[in-house]
Length: 157
Image (cartoon, rainbow, N blue to C red; front, side, top):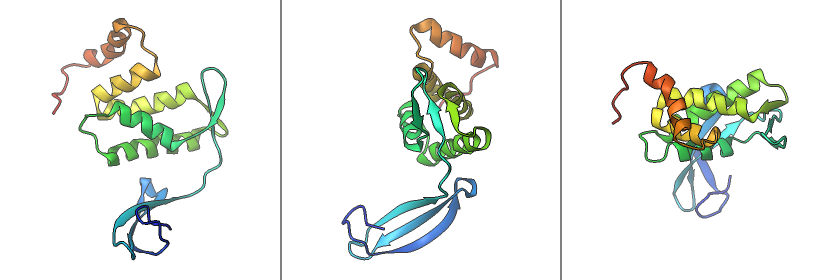
């Protein structure tokens, strides 16, 4: 493994542990040249699942693309990278368990929204506004109504 800092191929593994509910191995490494530490993940290579976009285009399922969308939705919210990783792992597990070769983008977005809604209401609305392509304030109100009907909102930190 090449060091991301000095680009040499001279490291040692300091720690290994299961991650993503046992579907990955997290390895903490130290470069023996520059002495800096970094983390790598080893995952089972899954069969390729394609995401069918709204306009019919098919793209390979991408953890990174999902991460980018979640990071935008969670920007300036009290949500850690580990919590985002947990959402990604849960959605990915659901996709590989319930969809064989293709998953509609609307199904994928719904899975992400279910996970995000349980974690943070503001991030949920941000994600929903892009995913559902809100056009005006009424779209926001329609999305918030089920949350408001559940009862008092919990205070945000």
